[in-house]
Length: 448
Image: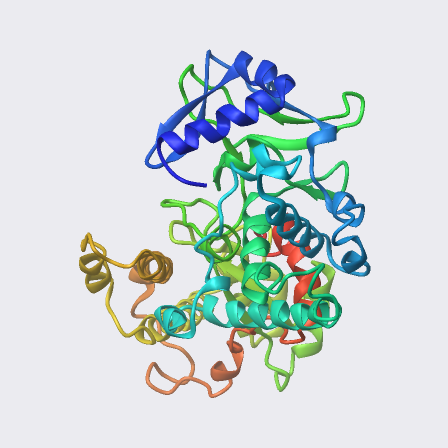
């Protein structure tokens, strides 16, 4: 995309290419250079619920445009929407200035910093993060998808030049589509949109929403909060930092949507297993369940689940509440909190560096950008576990002297069965690629 004056020039061309966009944008949004990127800020105070931008539907690039593209249309059959759009992007980029979409293409990045594009050596920076396995699974999915595509592409090198239609170029295009496209709920599709692709993404619910309006035949960006004149407009992106890094190639400090997952399960040998399982199923939960862990709040549902799992007296089952944070008994509460504290300590001990060492490393100005992202991500993970430990300590303080049945130093062996290893995402490449759709829509990693 370039930087500085080049960025401004690219957006100038975009406005000249699409006068309707310039007219709509000039009402409420204007460009502003911010740290090497183009931001869009309000020209006046904006009320919550007010439309800040309207994009004509005929300039929204979707999988349908890819299917109708004369160069790559045949390649899109049976492919996921994101893959189709990546192929469209490759085809249009190959035309360079002769593409009718050239002004839009010039405002898109050439690639992103997503780990989907990192080398094996660079991925080692994520070796302490849960994101590493997710990255490997999704890279494997993309690789298998490309192998299927290359069977057709290799048979026609004149139509699909190898220097343009290569695996690395495909992965770059896919990363751009993943980072810059927007899901439109009403139309049930992804779309690459002028200007919208450049808007910042935030985990704060105050971020704007984007959707297709059939009556207007346009995509509208609607304010979810009141904006003051000159304030930057951003889109609501409800994803934890791990998935944000994979999709956008960036992180958000103080991301309220950031969390880690912890997997728990009932002990099958428990005499109350069947009764507990029925209680959970009545609440829409399973005998094996994943819960989010946040830095700044205690996961109430997780506590309720653990309380239920540790109940030994059937008469106490009725005391377990999932609609409020209520202890079953002091002994049960102590056992549950110790269990959670132990898991947090185990997770933190698995990292090779401390929080202090990560903070110090990030102070280096010459740090590789990818390594910086990896370090920031891992530091964020540690802060989540540390924050949970702090919350547990505050609850343990009043009951620290309460013993468990078997003493503090001899916990039941079945405790080890309670926490299952966090499951990696499926390794079946085709399933993983199809899963990109729900992932990018925000259906995965949602708050529980």
